[in-house]
Image 1 (tube, rainbow, N blue to C red):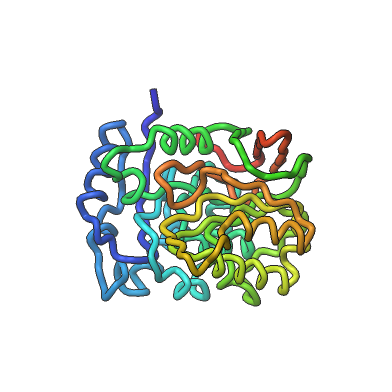
Image 2 (image 1 turned 90 degrees about the horizontal axis):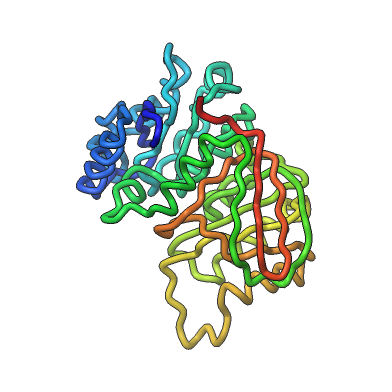
Length: 307
């Protein structure tokens, strides 16, 4: 039986074009006993965005002014728009109000840039995981996603096990970070990119061909970022159609090239990202990654947990 929680919605990115999914998600959460606040963010719209820049920025910055914090801050959806807000976030206020508090900021995709900017500027840990419309509002709610979400938010230590096609065997420790690869790459050379040494970098993406993924990883390498990581974990890379022109060039060959060229372990096949089934990961947590005979485990701790 789930404990009833207060969930505050934010919409820093695209307009929620699937209003039925969002309504279904709210109804599901309320049926579990949760209180869903700031529902106006769902229907708000300006051009392709979930409101103008000032409105979407206010969703985030208002958190610094709340006298009573919600248990969960949940992004409605991704899309595009969060990058426009990074230089106007109230980092000082957000750090003062949220650091070391039992509140979970959750989302993925476009929201990655806000999560990493908060980590870089304030040390705030957030959760890369499901969002309102696409996950909680899916026609059939994934039991896998639902269970992993609540486990990550309530357990001081979280372990995720999966079968990986990686040829590596070993054990690596470091800071867990990452998210959507395209959004990570937009932060290169900016103050919003966390400076993670000895990291475990987890990546995922959608609608990106393997050659684009390889190009982004090359950019991370040439920026000096990959060399500072202990290992890479690859999540789901979905909605990509290969053609005869690719002639065997696929994600598996990209991962192997990264292993060979940059001498960094790449542990593949984690259920993380835009697929129906996704784990929830605490960005900034202390993590241990292991892989033996294609059996992988990622454990993390030190993240904020709900009371």
